[in-house]
Length: 563
Image (tube, rainbow, N blue to C red; front, side, top):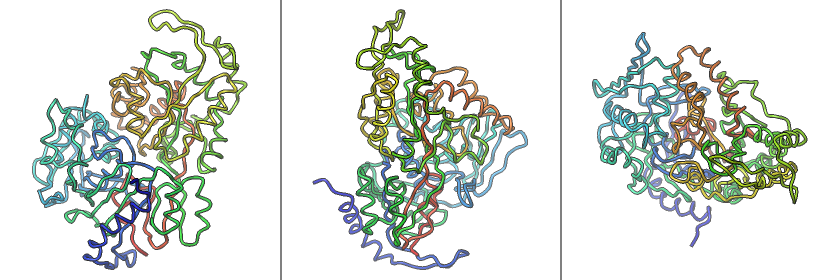
């Protein structure tokens, strides 16, 4: 029998009721007043935890789970979004900038009672560095420029860099520390076993963060139970449940019925309706999520190679009705956007203001395609002339499949229909290729075997960090078959990326980062569509939510409490 969201939540509530009754609720008084502890914080989401393995997972909901499970040397936290200590209580840098020393909370334990020491930090970091060209590539970008980790004593970690790095702390915020006594046995096959280990099959997970995961369901409910050995502020809730919904309408219905306490992304069509309900609080703020049209940019792709031409992509951008997408798909809770880096990085100075969306201008799009020799054919679809040479292809219509994953937090099918109708006006035919969930969609993009040869286009999104380094890294050749979803391969871009990551002078680094943003916008491996707004809602019986710190801070789960 397939369980509905409400039925799953009811089952989890019954399962946890005994634990809550045994522990009871309590109230504590701090600088912010009385905090009532206890209760199960029930969260609804349309984003899945695709894996509990940080070397495999690609979804932002998975990153949030890792923040809750694993120590980080530093994390983002309030007020605002600022770097602060996590496992590290303090840190210093040598005058050369090559040696960073972190002092850790002493006498800490993993959730299974084993000692959590600097040796775990050094093992995790050195393992990622050892296999960074392969199995650990997804985590290696955060450790760019590091030569080695050492652990001179149980509460001190020393990180040695090959060159001074200008964004050390922002990078290390993305570094999750794993228990060596659990993960150390999975380094066989030159590190390949690190990607095959499935923590979800060995529950409860062994963690050092505020929670252990005692139940995992990719398309159901995942249960976070407090880790009694956590070194930081404890969870105010007796447990946190995260329930994934394939149907956002059902999620909203459960929130209205009192079966959920918090929804981390309100369906855009329901935001205005929920804001009128007296029992609910709706919060709207800037988001780190940018939606896009993704192009296969691998220079070796064998078919439909006209899509490699930036001028063709420019024509498609002129034909893209961003304002209609904002109004219809996002119900006004988004803004037209053209930069790979999100609005959340504007205040930090990382977003080049000159990178702006092209205006919606189908006439201009038609002029470009006419100038390229793609004549209108039968049925109103343009024809691409036959080509010769290594990648010879017969004449063919400008007809392409665009993959639409099923796990988007917006109505991807509605957006597809808008794009299909808009591109038809310039003689380009789109058909929808169902992408399945995030893992299946990514497998389609990288097929076969990480070579990026079989797909043409996709529509998806990216949720990045405040510092631009990670988002810039996804377009490097080093991230093929890891974070890259485009197969983009440009040696000049890769050289710029390596250079910016070692620039200590932040003004100079900003100039190069902006140059890279302009380059990306001109090459168009993506057509960026909109920057979503973050719309969340919670039952007023709970308070203390900090929505913008999702996947940034352990306080995202630990701070909410009953009012």
